[in-house]
Image 1: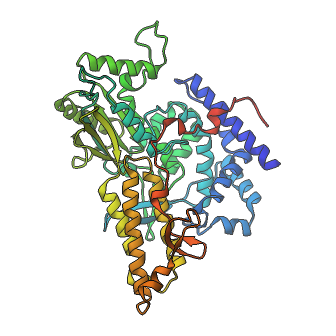
Image 2: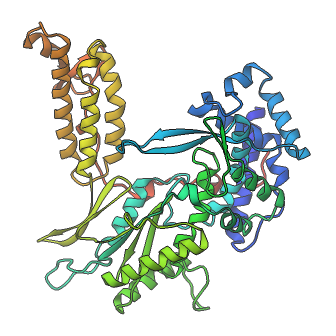
Image 3: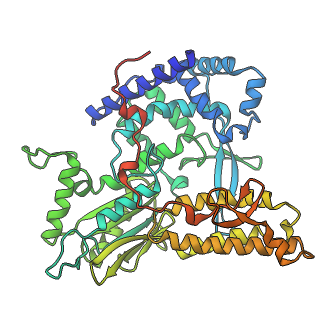
Length: 504
């Protein structure tokens, strides 16, 4: 009951901050330190850290959640951390750097910073109170690392925006609202983010100097790589609990550049009755009708696209202007090789999906989200690598248990694409043939009848036979329900749905 009372109190504080931020978009909260150092907030952050898969990964001090529980215990650990914070003795430790290979890019690594358990708890407490303040101010075109939002929502937002609404006399949609797109790619975003610009944007909403000073200490804590200390004069270490939120705070400057067409915070006309989002939609429509250029960005963390309703020259000029803006405001640089201006009819890749304006002779242009052929080929390579000769000593059940999570996750990620069922069926056939070859290598003296005896009726669909051993059977991608993603499926965070009344 004490734990539930504490969680209810933390949720009440978050609701209060969220509603205040909604009502006061230009003000800054001035007293937050007492809440961050409250034992209930620290316990809430501890529960998040202790339930995470990284609880068994240690920082530079070698401490894990299990060792803390078996040693001094949770209560003494949190009380000691609270005393350090309130006395001013707390100092963040350098993060332990680990290089993670990039998927599909041999020889390239992503640096991952692993903070200590103590630093994770403090970062979690800071994030618990900062997130409601900034979540109330983030715009609807931002989807990365936000509660209730996903890559599918970002793709569906682009699809809806690119859908031609007006038909010509031949009843076909011949004119696209956005014929060009700027594919944005920031060079080393998390490593090169300017601390000065980030803290300036943070101070616009948080005026408690002790909180901003603590965040500055986290940014300057440095990393320990192969027993060598490296200073962090720029960037937010990937792997920290606070890093995604801080990156969103800084990169929200991208969509703010297009305020007229995304969200009009200030009224152009005093008698305006609609909200800023509706006013921006009307501005985009009338600018397109008048032949003026309009822009619509959609961002997922540091990946973004800008839809352009002008000419190719307008898109190229905007790409150069955006590069200068990012350099001056955030100290970031657009990658000249990966930042391109592409025609919507040629298609572009975003967040692992392929988006293209498809022409149908009956209906005209229509936006389509497809599965890239390279992604399907990567899945085939993964299946092939796991069904090689070296893996024959294991049983069929263990092999299926190894393959099924990969197949299930891939199918759930791409289930909202156009014609996903055809791709799933093709991959099911390939996986079944690879398992058959794997069984032939495993049992070279067995006949084909003995091998195919392992192809048994499914427990889910008895009329369908598939590879099965005991209760473990092959996961069929084609059985995954395929449908279009709906923006209404995106859930609101708990602090945005509650009334905000004072609680326990």
